[in-house]
Amino acid sequence: MGDAMELRHLRTFRVVARTLNFTRAAAELHYAQSSVTEQIQALEAELGSKLFHRERRLRLTAAGERLVGYADQMLSLAEEAKAAVDEERGEPEGDLTIGALETLCTHWVPSLLGAYRAKWPRVRISVTEGGRGELYHGVRESEVDVCLTFGDAPGDPAFASRTLGEEPLVVLAPPGHPLAGKEEIRPGDLRGVGFLATPKGCGFREMLDRIDGPVVGTEVGSLAALGRCVAAGLGCAIVPAMVDHPGAVAVPLAGRTTTVTMTWRRRDENKPAIAALLATAGGLVRA
Image 1 (spheres, rainbow, N blue to C red):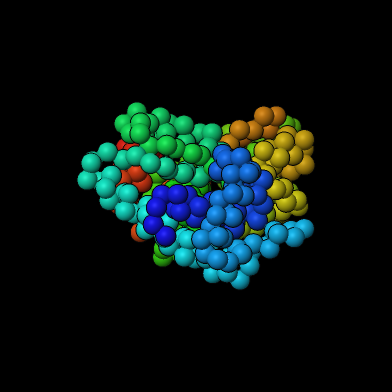
Image 2: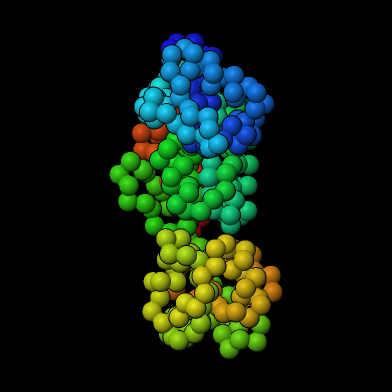
């Protein structure tokens, strides 16, 4: 496999293999569905093997399963080769995918992208939003180049991370709740108080679990829904101060903060577009 068209086929194959849906793959790649089908058929013809079972539900064949790993390696090598050439020119270009939690997409990503775009306009940037587990998976699978999350850096040795700043924590309380009238809340004030929380494994849940005393009565899947449930009087919640909270009262939680953490694949940190983003983020670090 050698020409650019074949690399394009491999990129398309990788997306179809992940989504197992031609329609979703076409939307993600910004191709017509017929183009995705034609590229997969061309790749199958070149390899002399069927890559997918086309039944009621699309499935990888054994040959397709084997090709996934090789496609990842070949595309990664192609990206590294292009990055090396770009580095010689001294100006980053190409594609850069940034993933972030919903709140960080709203409050951190715009300033980061504004500073980056002003200096490196030739880089094509895309932003994806997701939960922390989804974002780490995206980084691990080379679907996301860099992600922004709250809390500690992941322990995966394949990852590198940097703390961009500290964010104070607040307690969200319904109007009229005893905690809503305080100027500041200490962890001891939370003993026995009913709290709403995101599911275990979420960074927001870890913030709550580190405090002894709150009683989790209800789990809520999204941060937006969490704030609305607090406003409706269903309980309190602990969130970073930047989180929007219409209808709820935010009271500072004394001495408690969380970190904003940037994570990327360690082996990719010298790629020009990523190295430039890390340098840009370093200039925006705030305490």
